[in-house]
Length: 288
Image (cartoon, rainbow, N blue to C red; front, side, top):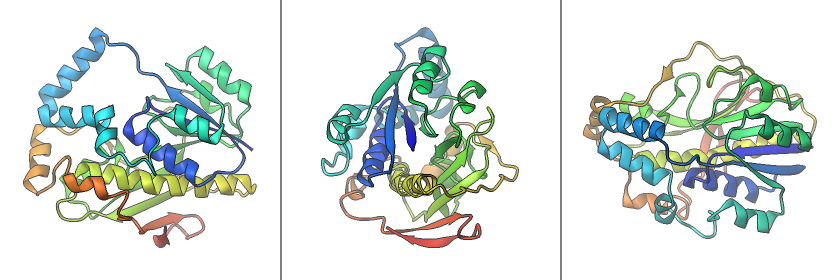
């Protein structure tokens, strides 16, 4: 079985998820695709300025950290996180390709040349029908939030703003161009504790995502029929604005805590709740 795993532009969360995924030794042949960042443009500057005005400097600063080498340095653990996809390739010997636009004809041509059975996706670009139609087993999206409640953006922010009891990850099929709306394959969740930081949710989320992604890929490899549950009507979220983020901070939550550095090395995630068709779509304990 051939699997293509698509990630974003080697952000700390991309590298964390892929590092943990590879440590699980997924079966079959694995090909990695990495989205390259486009060069700075007026459109990108305008977008950042708009977010700065609506969500504030703290939010923008945190997202710069979350998508840059500074974030990787903050949470670096050489035993867990590889510093780049290239270092992973040297260890695990997988084929690797880069792209700017996943839906571009040249990218589709590269993907078709590998004849993938299934594609796993952890990058932010919307996937179009021309790509959806390629893998016979479908495209599995790794969404860093619980669906259908937290479709869209800010899935590690809105649960804190809402005072939700849980945060988690959902693996679902991409069967249309609608965002985060495909049938759910499996979900994992963990309780939100008092004064959890936004970064801590991101880290725990990817630890669980790696476990579930390997669980799902093994089911595909064993030729099991990987069933899915259609989503009930969800709510698409945009990025939160200043008022909502101020409410989050007033409840004691911060973007980053110094203690977040210890989450990976301190075995802070030993169990989470899990559901899929085998659990009868009911939450069951899953031990790591």
